[in-house]
Length: 141
Image (tube, rainbow, N blue to C red; front, side):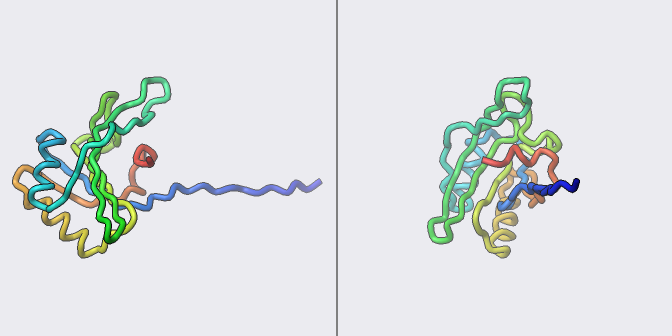
């Protein structure tokens, strides 16, 4: 007897760009500087709730967002350290992430990273590939 079997392959759609930001500043201070120097308008939203460890309480991470109406691009500034640990544990040296959803032109992205690195209080801002992160599921919201 031959069984008809279909295999369902599931691949997470990571349709966003991710920038890792390292700084010793608090989230609100970093957003203030980004708003001031780069003409963003990051505003605080309700904390992001993520089930990091199934046996523990969910973790809460501060999150700010801004949108570019013209290109329908959404920006999220997310703390890596929350109430129950790290959002992306394999990147403990990263303090924050800037997630860019929908579309950003590669030239605009390079200009953004360059401008972030010019803010004296930001130690480093680098683009990272979300597909290479073990805990990338934590970034799906």
